[in-house]
Length: 482
Image (cartoon, rainbow, N blue to C red; front, side):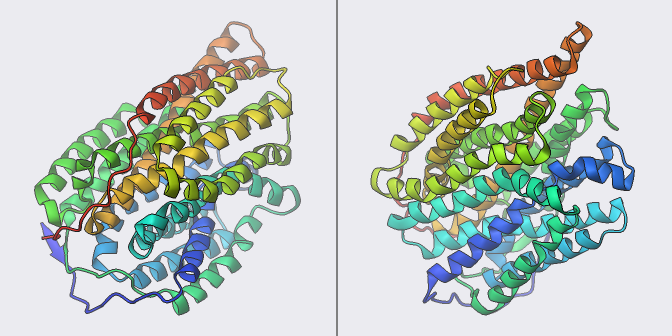
């Protein structure tokens, strides 16, 4: 069952000042991705204001992730079918409207709906940015530019809790949206003037069945993984296995459907025919598990075990985020010179050492130690993100760029949810066990964090071995998209 959109005559535009266009896209993407993790610190305040339990409050993040998981797989089709400028404007209008609605939200339900509208724009922006850079930047300079993208992918989620902590220390939670709104409006205005089509849209049909299967697959998996942590404490509205089984079955059907459709696929899985793409994407997924897992655990540890305030917690996590931002362009330039393996292998090893070190955190650990270990992990992840993204997407022929970027973005969301689910589940189960054995809440939480990060260390050790398989292929020759 396919539906063909009406043809639209467009031709690619030569970008005379690509730096200006890329700067606008990077800035816009940073702002929208930042909102993925900005709500976590505000949940206690929102629970009091709207009189909702934690299981309801978590939907402010879960609904955002679910929307991202459903929309991102469709972006491969959208970026193939429509001009880049139109997709950008749709993304920023959606994000801006969602931000305004969130700032004005009179009820909790309206706030959740606003987060969904925001997430639609966020889901469109990241694949759009990657596809644009792959299209207009020569292969020999992609490492440097992908280093800039790494700032968006890794630093924006990392400093989200810090920014929200700073805002909430002085202002009402609504200011997290009021402060973002002018930036979104400026991006929208500049985009209407600067963004031009740099790709050649093709009149491809959209397979409605694929869209449905995609929504069930990635939505079910994200929801199921996000519910695992709640189920560990016995507080979840549905059996965890139900959305996971539905999501897994739908994912299998979705993959079969895409392989059968080939050139008409919603998300072209022929990207995985590239060994370089497959290995790199697997390591990106592991890296995102580590990043999002620690982003959820460290604030719990810092506040519930070490007794830090929300603002202090945000400041402890700030140096790591800044280090990733500083290193990203440096690593990008190094990639252009030496390729991925000399950067990815040490990065995986450093990340593993950091996670193993985090597993030693206890009730007596000082803030300085936590900062040092978090910075060390940030260095390791910075050495991995840019080379992996660049080598993965650079190994694809141009007609698969949009599908490759959509695939990477989708797997990042699933991996982030999986990392959060794994870490929170292990922590919760171990904490409950320690409490039943007579330990205090603080001691039980510390033991739970220790156990969760131990599993993170095991996963990272496997990643060290896989990192040795990373390589940079020669730039592929464009093949007809048929």
